[in-house]
Image (cartoon, rainbow, N blue to C red; front, side, top):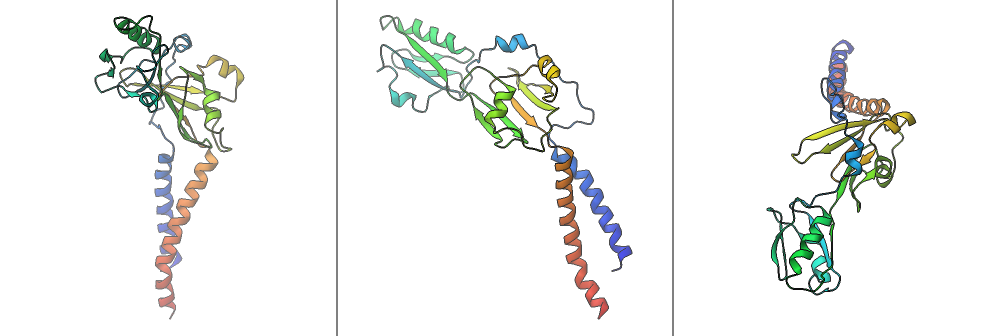
Amino acid sequence: MTLKTILPLITASLLITACTSKKYELMQTPTPPEPERVVEDAYMKFEYKIQPHDRLAITAYKYPEITPMEMNSRGILVDSNGYINLPLIHRVKVAGLTQPQATRKLERLYRKYLRNPSFNVEVLNKRIYVLGEVNKPGVVPIDRERLTLLEAIAYAGDLKDNAVRDNIIILSPDRSGRLHMRKVDLTNFASMQASNMLIKPNDIIYVQPDTWKKLRVNTQNLSTVVNAISSAVTPYVLLKKL
């Protein structure tokens, strides 16, 4: 096999690598959509609503026997229909309620059985997701209704050196499950002031890789292909020389 024969194979591998390299970046579309602006006031007033399959820590301050420690060790599971089971009042629907609303509902129901009941309800599994070029990507548990983008990045161990800092993508699901996208430029202070930097539970943050990392990945892919071709043709070339 001559050099003229090998060159087309290398060219073809380059084309394949170029075509597949786009898959390295997430959330691509042929025409990038306009980022949907979410009113920051709505985020400031946001209160998390309990959902099916959430786990709740419920504390009865004056009557600890109602909600013993072992009951709250892993949280009380909200079933698929949005109900929980508690002593005396049995099945109670809490899905769709905020934590303060659920607290008031339990206090109202328990007044039939207890004197001046006082409760606290907290969702244990609130979380956000940080993906891409951060040092600790994955699920980030949070114990608040909301936090800022910079706090979320700090929880994820800060950005890597090859992170794109001027185009951070934030995906926020609404109640119907539809995703709304925002983009934040962390390199421009004026842009940061004008952007919605607040993050709420179940938001997804994606930090894209820069061009150099994509080039390194493509180079590694090309090197693998060339090595495979070289391994395949070397015995043939050696035999031809004999």
